[in-house]
Length: 470
Ligand SMILES: [Ca+2]
Image (cartoon, rainbow, N blue to C red; front, side):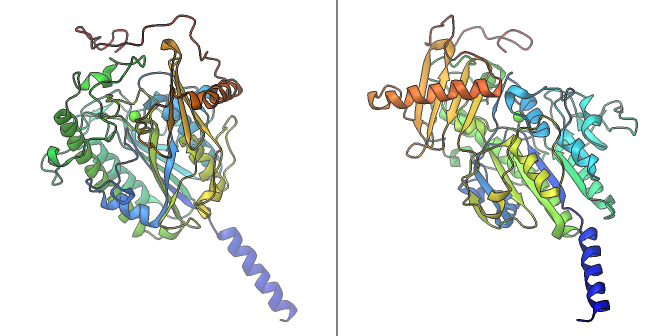
């Protein structure tokens, strides 16, 4: 090659490298959606054709988890962890004390946009995103009558208006409008947070997908009542059904829950279609996840104020350029590792204090491991360690410990803590849990100063909204 030609070739390479934009991100976040609610990942009953599409084109994590919470509304800490990339012991739940990952994407030249559920207080919205529409900032509400607000250029929210549509549909509309407005001058980060399938399980009238309760299998770990007082037996979520839990009630609840998930799946499909039809389809990472799972009859529980797999494990699917297609990964990871991973893929510098671990290696090669172990916490009353095979849950207030072999017992039905052959393992895991909690800044004791009785009977008088224990 002659010198001028070589120079020209080099120039073209340099220009094309500069012109290659970092990938866009479309992040879809569900509320209280169990990891076992996706057809393509093994649920034999539910219909989720669009999530199945996403599973086909990306990596689906079967062992991704939220880390826990310091209050019953675990939505709040879960979102704070996700958006800040910080572990449970390190978060400011209102996201005011530290910069967030979406803010970091904005600093790196991304257009950033949020819509749907926001659960960390209005002041943190403009600190995180440049634009926001149809935000639902309140507590729980009927999604057909949910008040939504838009963010003005000043960062203030417009007075809440009642949406004429299901909130999840309206938030999807706003996502499609944002995607359409992108002209390719800068990359974008779009965050769509459904407020479902959190209860109440309400979908628009006439939504065609329906499930007969009798067709829904009971969870393999169904119990009429939790075997002992886990410290959170009568909180709001647990009051959704009476005790003892009846099989038919759980089936009806799951039928409505699945229907809601199928409705959300349609919204996911609308987003996938919009990205596919856009000029930036090949350069967009799509992520689907949820803030927590939920019990829905497993272990005699309904809500997510416990550390069992059904409540802590979350769906996580990542698809996009350079990411393996139609693969499963058993790598252990937390939700708060997801934005550090996207940051790495997009060349975005981490905000200070983000201590999540990026797992980009798993996205290229899904047989790679990620974290060696995970730990979990719920208030001071439940702490847990999962080393990949063994899971130990400690309940300091009633001096109870459970040990499960997740390899032979993924549904946590056989507590091995009374087996003398496991005594050494339990001691070692308790010591490791205590040490790792301290290292992360969680100084809660694993042995309570004052012990309470572990036996529990459903009370005749239940706490009401606003009362202690609700
Ligand atoms: Ca939630």
